[in-house]
Length: 440
Image (tube, rainbow, N blue to C red; front, top):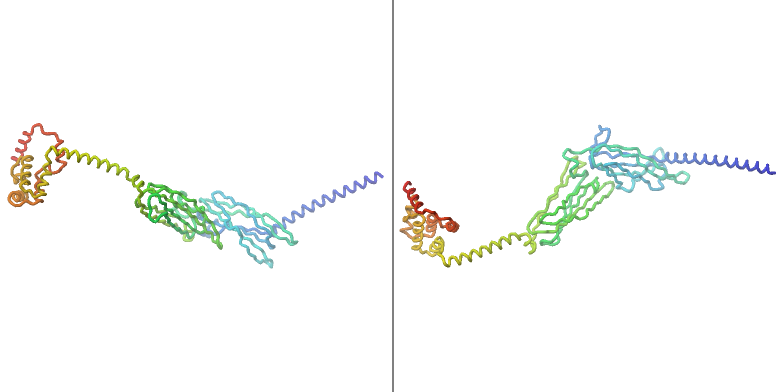
């Protein structure tokens, strides 16, 4: 009895093992067939957009640095997609990559009596320097329907793509600030805190740069946020906006700066230039952003802050002049007035007798002469001398003769004559002068 049971157990064990291994082999074979079936029912194609400066003779496409390149990824199936397609991140050194359009372009196509469903995705690439670049194989995960009503998922890998980036113009260098794109425009806005500006008020300058087929982060900064003596600059946060409308990629950079006025007067904010490479015309273009002039009124504190040195100099000068005037007034209370001043007063009041006396006194004291006509021998002087002695004297004539005769007609000469050391032998100087006159 025990032998019969042992024999039955052995038979059951062998039957179980045969069934287990047979089932495992069938399951593995079925899994391979399912993956092959999924792959056969999904087609993956990738390619790059045409460069703006297309040249069919080149084996590899050549794009401008910063030019927008679109990597197209298209998946197709004779069934339909049951879930969202997932594309792995693409990383390329010195190339900015971004999937700006999060929605695919869906369409159908009929081939050999079978309707195929297509999804076309776009990944934008922006090379940042010249050179050769390779777009690596990218994983694309899809899920499609099956004929039995189920779903099948598969991961496919795109073929690598390569391209070359070059500098579009010899006028450009890697150190310059520029960008490639289409239809760039700049809008400038000015606003101020008050209609009548004074020190302490603020002026806000805003620039809105718009362009197509570029990326907002690639648009170079324009406003220089450097402060000056006239204003203090405060940079505002930059706003970057990228959008996509009906297949057109639009980018916008908005930057602004607030200028707090520090001094009064009239000054002009700087003019800026924006350089970009036009992909349509294949030309280097520049947009000039004009500055604007403003007139700012001073406050009392700002005026003193700006002109305090001048105020101090004027105050000190006025104080010194006042002290000098007081000293001169006290001095001339006990001393005679300068001869030139007495002469000027006599001419002003028409005291011609006194005018003649003073003029002849100056002639005798300064030139040791007693006749006007002996001073100068030219005809003009001889005529003036005769008129001065015989006819009525005029104010202009009196001043002209005094200016010619008197060495002390200038107040500064009078002052210097007082501080100039006197000659040790004045009689010798007189003889020397007389000998010089005889020689003439």
